[in-house]
Length: 371
Image (cartoon, rainbow, N blue to C red; front, top):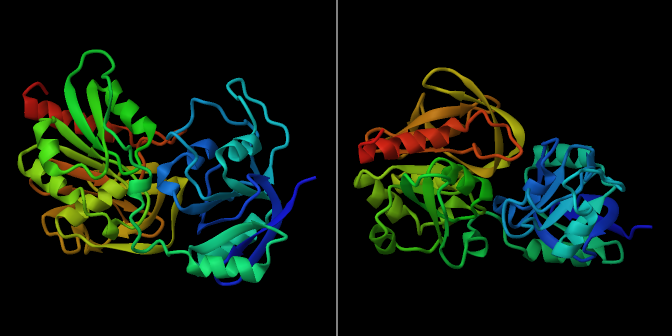
């Protein structure tokens, strides 16, 4: 028998279920993800730091977990909520159950929840602070802790997920480029995709200053995904501008996209409930092609008119979300800088947007004269 537990939202809405993983109390921002697969990648995505993630797909955990699909060195979510956790799992790569994985990571989960009702509520009321607790914790006590917990707005969470020391990933095959990756919460697959394209990747702590970056003489700068409010993250802005003005290609994803916009005066804002799924349709403005994309973000860059970026006339919009018309990509009008809000590196997929890594490589090759 499982221990009863519950999820409490800051507006007082309560959802009962049973605990899995660690039997403890946890606080965070309640959000939802509509992906049908990839729960282990969700759990280990640093962009989810500080968040309690609800999966809308009703059965989660049926293929267990393994050592190969982790996107970072640890489980990153603050809590995990599902309709039904699989009691029996089966996969040839699997090593243990989802329940055991959460428990070993010290992360609390909740199963048996009406995730349909929870998702509908969050879509209407918006992402908000929440807590998971055993049923014997008084609701008033948990609510007091939730209301004392900081909101996501204004939080810089990158310091908690960034690497403490630089490290390198060797190029696969012949080394063609040296890429610096600002680790704001980077996913492992991003680094591997760069290495597969002939790049030796040096991953840097998020607080690395521009002087240290210039000393490394990179061929390109990759600005990663990450958690928190982009308005609270300022340490990479000087580096982005300085390298771009020297003609060094810059490629950003998710939080990196938002920081590139901010580096030239762009504005960001918090979405009501965010984009977290594996099936968002995005139109590429250059040719009208539709990409099916994986997304995980609660903030967006403000657009201006048909293809402008509000406050940043040097930038133009390149991609748009077909669900809500929010900006999904941008580029500099003169410098070799581009970025997307979604995740082209997504594992287990979709893979419609992998061409963006080739675009980055092409920019570096042209600069070196071997394109």
